[in-house]
Amino acid sequence: MKPHPLSSLPLGAGSSATPVLSPVGAMTLPALRRGWLVALAGLAALLLWDLAGWDLAVVRLFADAHGFALRDHWMTSGLLHQGGRWMATGLAVMLVINAVRPLWPGLTRRERWGAVALTAVSLILIPLMKQGSTTSCPWDLAEFGGVAHYVSHWHVGIRDGGPGHCFPSGHASSAFAFFSLFFMLRRAYPRQARCALGAVVGMGALYGFAQMARGAHYPSHTMWTGWICWTLAVASAPWLRARDADAGT
Image 1 (cartoon, rainbow, N blue to C red):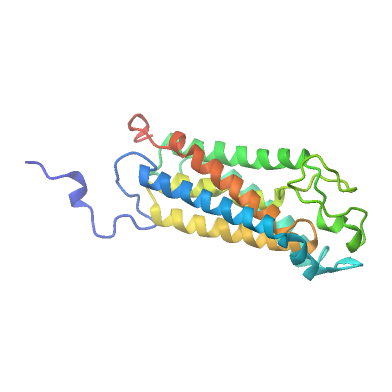
Image 2: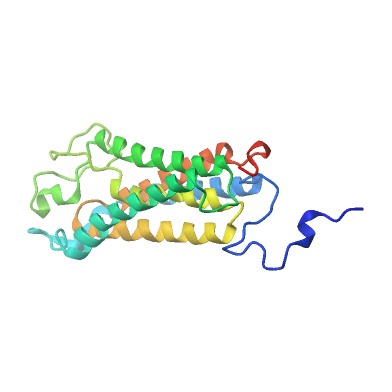
């Protein structure tokens, strides 16, 4: 009887540099269930946050009647805002290069191009949602030197007297759109996938904090962007799943 091909793998197989030779299929049913459970738990937490009305209370910690002191600070405006855009551009270029000439040889064509497509959809969807929003940014509120009054983003269609177009957070999507890295890598490179997931969540939280400190967004704007991008990724996971016909490509 011939030994199973996986029985000869060294003990270190599956490290961050070595693809895991698992059966083709990027997400098992239990993994999909976990993804949806995370999405449902996040939705519940977001609804509780909005119900508690904590957005305005939090941004008040960073502003006074003269506005937000960190609005144009080099750290929040320069490094974390403008720098974050360049980071997103670099990651997007890397994904396209990886789709054409694999940087991770253990990935299939479907996984590589699927990550490109998922990232693109996320980066397009969030700004489109912002364009249709009547919610203004914190720095537009009258109590911070602007002209608007606070209206929850749940009051769809009710204008707050400001310019609107602020919900959800577009800048946070320049991090959360790259949840695609996790779903692309998790079959063949699980350790790298987990590192990518942690980095994306960390970057998204950091970008969100910077935008909140500047007065550009409420905390919930960042959290909703993260939830939308994650849910979109989980919903797309069955389509992104590697198939036998893709193996070796």
